[in-house]
Image (cartoon, rainbow, N blue to C red; front, side):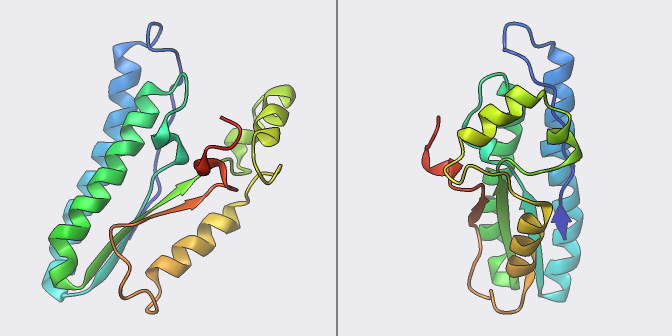
Length: 164
């Protein structure tokens, strides 16, 4: 199972409506938890499975994203806990933390904002959806029988602190 749903409602904390915080946490974290709970029941019973949670490099922190960053940090912690709980049932649980990916959402950014984000990347480029898909394919493959509880960054090196 791949959990890939999420929303953003960016704002500085002093401007952020409580409803925007709640909605982001509800969808990004609780939605992931609910799906994992149901998958865990089935995978535990069949004694096998793979769960990949899509988090975000933003779990490390981004200004104006206290809700989003917190929700994705929760997804990382959830992933780690489930790896501990489900490992003895041959269920592997990992997370992918994408960075700046060329999606309809990033294509809506102002050109100067997007250029600034790209220039802050060590690779000076954006990732493609296929980069994330390839990481998912790797983590759900049979060749990864000993990888669980991990976070795989697909972020052009941004997670190492470059450009922050």
